[in-house]
Image (tube, rainbow, N blue to C red; front, top):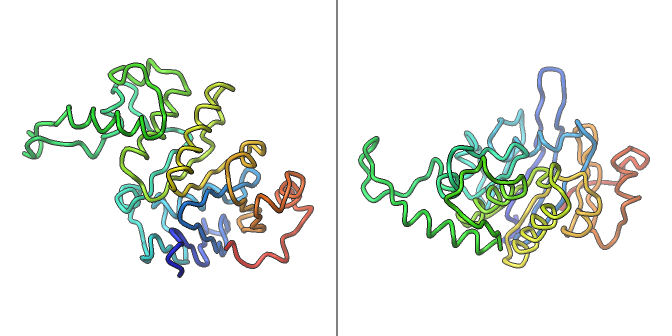
Length: 257
């Protein structure tokens, strides 16, 4: 595997009994590259992400991350390796503020005494502010509880969490699906900032305009298989839709590289 590749999957497959949700996915993501995963509902996009983030275990196949073959036991294992994922559900705690959410499960401590540990709130606040600055996220009051924030602010907090911990790979699953125009623009600006800082990204999106604005390459899933690997500069929305709907079969597709 080339040194510039951050993630590679080989023959990644997931069966649920007789249902073949993902079949033989060969995928490559290079360092600093932004790639969109597109496809209709049930095409295998989310199944693919669940395998590479440790949410589920693949039926067969290999995951190589940062040059090392991996078999993540769960999302925490993947996160510790450097994969940060922003799911549609966001996984934020409504009754906690921004620093507490960013450091949930990985709190900084002044004294580590198990259940009697003393948390280092100052260090967590400072790291939170650095993460927000890195992604250009503007939260007027980081001590505000998540439940009191808009949908866009919540999404930005979830994204800032990835920047705070200097992830090696960020995965975003439909990050603007439930947002208005202004909030969507803010999230898209964060994605551009990640690109400028050289952080690789996998973006799952149905938004064709967004995809063509933000990524370098488009990988299309259909019926559990990768059917197209398209350079953004060499394709157009009509071509992508043709692969999504099956008007183009992807018979010529060999490898998403």
